[in-house]
Image (cartoon, rainbow, N blue to C red; front, side):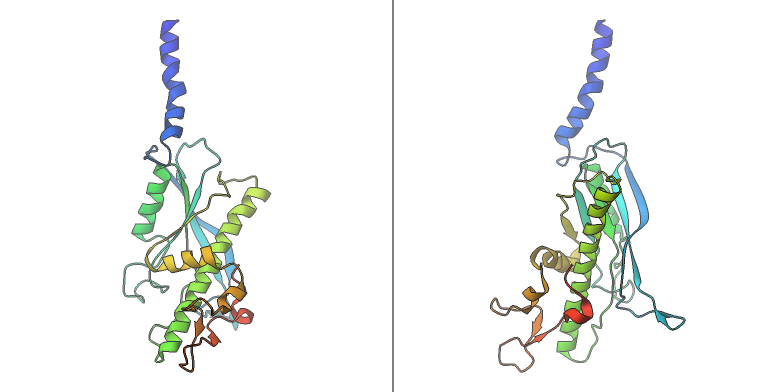
Length: 234
């Protein structure tokens, strides 16, 4: 009898120990990854035409989770890659995709701590070589806007799956922080602070990041993002 009691105690305590240390220390050794999950489709910034039709971007993500985890109510960290909102090589760095080595390492470490994470690709493209500074500024802000939209599309995807598909990812949809890698941190701030298009038109809290001062009088007067062309922030 004593043998059986001593044998069973570790089996009971191990899961409790994991839950106690979870999110604070790496408690899982292996990570499972599901790749090429389509979370949305949207108009492309880099125009691609096939047979006379504009082909939209297919938005995909890779999902990371701890291997063997029995918890089905885990926080999900949305991870955005860097790369100056341009593809690799074009941006002059080795970054620019959701499978950058830094993104993969971030997601794997999060999973070992007990989180789930999703590394998303998002729409790329703007012209940093535009002749006019106002054109460069406008292009950059529009790129940020698209990433903000795609990030929120990913959040909606997981929330919809939780409701309509019985939460196959085992996540807590009330806990979805966003992790910005390098320049994509601009998009994470926008996701947290911009809730409606009208907020982009506010000028009383300078500097107005989404409005240009075209005549140099110190008063922003030209929106860099037009809702009828780019859609709402959601």
